[in-house]
Every structure is written in C-alpha cells, then in structure tokens.
Image (cartoon, rainbow, N blue to C red; front, side):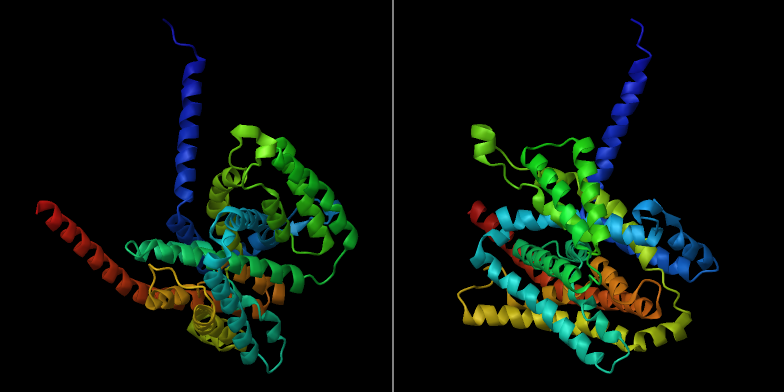
Length: 428
C-alpha cells in the first residue's frame, strides 16, 4: 500500500499541535510565568543600560496602527493598553470565578483575606503619601505600591514552600485577586483624565452582544474576537484606560452554565475554558513583552541608582511595598480575627501570615502600569518609580523567602514525623 502524500503533512500538523499544547501547559505553571516576567525585566534593564540603548528606545517609540481611529500608538503604549488587556481579561475571569464558585463566594471564609487585601492597599498608599507630602507632584503616584503581583508572588511561594499548608496559597490567591480588583477600580476612577461619554456608552453595545454570545456558549473566534476588539477600541476612545475593557469582558463570561439554558446536561460555563486558553498567552506573551518594553530604565551606574532610590517617589514606593504592605495586611487580619467571628484557617499559624504579608509586597505588572499612568511613560519620575518597584519587590521576595523557608522546614519535619508514626502503627 502506497502512503498518501498528505499523511506526513497530517502527522507533522498533529505533532505541531501536540508541541504547542505542551508549551501552553508549561506556560500555565506559576513558576514559569514568574520566571519569564523576571527574565524580561532583567533583559530590559540590561538593554537600556548598554551601548545599544538607542535601539531599545527606538523600539519602544516605534509607532504602529491606524491614525484614522487614533490608534497610531507606540509599541510601548500598545503593550500597556493592548497586551495588558489580555492580562486583565484573564484576571477578570479569575475574579468572577472566585466570586461565583471560589473562596470569595463564602463571605465568612473570604472575610479575612478580603480585609487583608484592603489593609494592604490602604496603608501603603498612606505611607507613600506621607513621604511625598513635600510637593513636587510626587503625591500623584500614591497608588503605585498598592497591588500585589499574582504571578510573581505565587511563583516565589511555589518555589520556596513545597511543604507549606495549602491554606497559605489559598489565602495569598484570594488576597491578590481582591487586590487586583481594587487596583482596577483605582485605575478606572483616579486615572481617567478626560472622559468621552459617547464612546463609553457605545461600548455597551458590543459588550452586550459579547455577553449574549458567551452566555449561549458561543466559542467561535470570528464572532467573539471582533466584538471584544470593538469593546477595547471604544473604551480606549472614551479616555478610560483600555485594560478596563479586558476586565469587563472577563466578567461577562459565565462561570457556571445555567440549568435553564442547558437542561439536565448543563455543565461549567466558559470562564474555565477561556482561562485555560488565554493564561499561556497572558503569562508567556503579554506580560513579558509589557515588562520588556516598560522596565528598561537608564540607571546611570551606582551613582544614578543612588539618585533614583533617594527620590521621595522611590522612597515612598519602597516603604509602601516593604513596610506598608506587611503592616496593613497583618493589622487588618488581626482586627477582623479579633473583633468578628471570622478566623484564620485551622491550618495556618500567625507566623505563616507574617511571611505571606511580606511576600505580598512583591508588586510588578500593575504597579508599573499605574506608575506610567501617574507620571507619564519615559519621564524621570516614572523611571525612579520603576526602579523602586523592582527594588522593593526584590527586598520583599528576599524577606519572605527567609521566613517561609523556615516555616517550610517546620512543616516538612512535621510531615516526616507523621509518616514515621503511621509506619510505626502499621507495623504494630
């Protein structure tokens, strides 16, 4: 029998899909997403401080897009407004899933991490503002040290805490999800300078059609993608930051399919499916490219680094992340546990919460975006804020590593002792 000439092509195509699936599975891992984020940031810093820094700035400033739609934007702006919309779409899916079917669906269970998230937003903003009361426009960046980077923080936890209780990861995830929701609200309310009502109202039309389609479990990209792009374009034209469009689209996707729509065979909604599909794009493409095009700051050697970190803006960011985040989270957690019926999970000790509170000082993607919105991309204030975000995040990661490593040893020994006891009882 003579093989069909199409068969090798089919095998090659099938092999390509298998390899693509493997790559996607790798990119869904928290450690990989965090590693790509850091590699992109380090590459940007090295490039911006190398003899080829001119090429880096030319790349950031390259303009692309239709001028008729006012979308002739630089690549740096496309990464912040466009690619991060994918990141916020995934964040919106995760937020809705947590509110509908996750830890946030039970108010009693969610009360402690929600309060911790609120405290972890308020106190860093207060400390930053106190540091920058002297004027000079620095106070505009009050929201920079407020958000925890989910990918980065969970990646650090996954690497250093293999024996830590699962409740610790759940607490951190819930805190970071609420944290992101608050950051999204801050961006929408405080960083919308000029609001055009007509495009914003017009965006409701494709958003409603997108919602209707996903509620009916439509998955066809040629239907959903034009609607999603239309929402993004109109929100961008309205003056509201375009990443908010990603959140709105994420919230529109159903988490659970209604029995009324699906009958007895009703199953999960599309949120889990879309999150599974888009997380690799967010973690492996959107966020690293944004980091590459946003964190490249010309430091100017040790003297320039010292000057950047001595700026009140940078001091406020570092103090907010390293001091404000842990204290705000711990204070809010203690107050809720002390004066309400809400309690910590039985598997957690207060020293675990201390380590987690320090870990929550890791901020990256959203903080860089807020810095650009507050001061304008490429300005000295924004550059100093970026240096401070990196410095503060590294200090928080190092401090959390020390605390949680020690706790990891305690839980590992306890686990080993339990296994030994079980073996002893089994042999008896």
